[in-house]
Length: 105
Image (tube, rainbow, N blue to C red; front, side):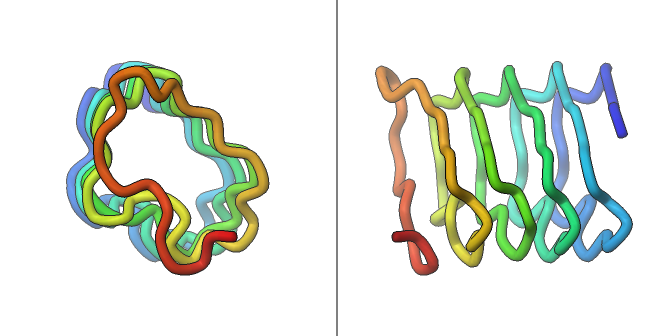
């Protein structure tokens, strides 16, 4: 699934979408709280221009996540109950916030 013109994803927009397997948001710059919460079949999430994530991307099946433009993370956005996550790619030069939380090792 692709939303090429979306620049912002609001809180709980895709929450509990069990049929969501893959999503590409090339122009998205901001993800609000729990926008992808409890999407157990979500394996692929492409956010190449996302600069801000405000809250957990929890309870999903994402194994490889690349966020090269990310500048700020709020509320333990990554790793909380993301047991499938094996590869996380970030550009740490301007990154602020708490990256790891419960469920990360």
